[in-house]
Length: 102
Image (cartoon, rainbow, N blue to C red; front, top):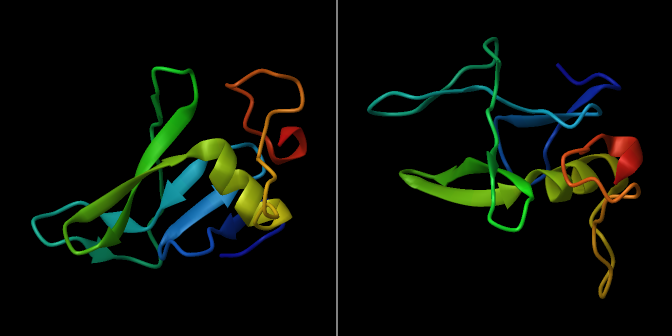
């Protein structure tokens, strides 16, 4: 499934990021979550009180972690920011999470 436009998010099994700033999941939400390799769905982000888009990603059985989308895009397409560096929006628009803008 890895292409130049969609790549797995490091550290989050079954989740993918696109250069357009979208996050996708291979998890099926049921009583017992199931990881499906051939099914993909686009996640709907929430917006935090400070304006950043976020998604909740499954990290272990019954545990989820809220992650800012711009940070996931940065880590996936540009690598983890170095110490004392941040992932920020070049154009200042917190809704523009395209890889070229982070």
